[in-house]
Image (cartoon, rainbow over all chains, first blue to last red; front, side, top):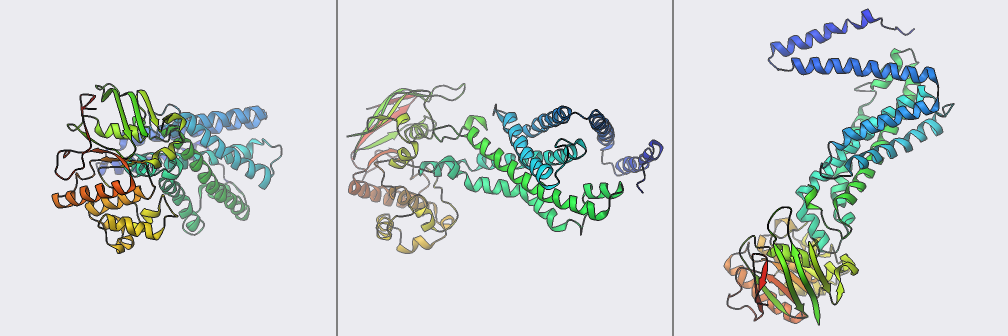
Length: 259
Length: 212
């Protein structure tokens, strides 16, 4: 039977917070203020998310579910764009599209083809799954985009040599793109090797804690692992392609002024 | 026949003084033009415009009478090759680098060009990034020539070389250039150096190209 912690129980996490603050003070890490700030943000953001999602559950309208997901995608794009070249005017739109497209395709496959939720917008499934997919799309997209841009900057001579030899910008950046996508995918691949042995993922742990059978939680976790891998790849590839188009002119020239 | 023509070419970068202003220039088939000028005078920028690695702020460029805009940029760059000051070779062997843009290049032709540039026949098997600067620069020349360009743009290719290697480079290049009937724009500090073919000498300073 799942234990639902009361607010009094929850307040006991203050013990852990106190320990962290004490350690930070004792070891002169200077992190007390940051930690307090981060703790307050964590509690407020999670409660806000919890109550908003609960309200969407209770109201039960498909358009509220989609509105919430759209808002989440804008926030994700805003965060993602911070790690792209600031002079690239289209960066926020590129980040949004990469996150949106990666999330849409993968959420559709998971919710409508694999677990077949009914109704199609069932918030209990759609919101957490799409949220998780979006988070991964954001991280992988930003990681790949950042790497692609910085490598392009440091390897301009190589890229321009390729262009000079008559290659397209797509061909000239192939190696940079490959490294950026691999870089974004490696953390996910590593976790696929260790999942269930070295660590139990947050979602699986959460499901078990809230009373689901470990086998059901396992099935969901398998879906989630593949869903994350596929999302990472989709979003990273889309964002890199958009960035390449933004960072080169139609005449296959590097836009040096954007770096 | 005119290979390259530039009309009223101007170039400047955000907020700085113009690097080129209203420059007119032409290069005929088989002709060699030396461009001199102080550092930072825009010689490299000029070559980048001719290779279309950069776009001019204003003015027009023509390749055999057709505007650069109406010419496929990849074909244009193959036909007007740019050899940069610092040689750029990629991972792999010299042969991998030579075949990069011309995978169907004949072995005989590669061997002859390597020989033309005083590179031993086994150079192809060497790791490209382990070559000396002088050798790497000559490999870059061979890589460019395999594309059978009509003009070649040289951005001080001899700058990183010592005097002996400079001499070899000059003599070799001039011989090969004449054999292939290649036009060339050569940015250099040593335009008056003995042994250089008689060609037009242009001077680029304060945005203006003089001596045309």
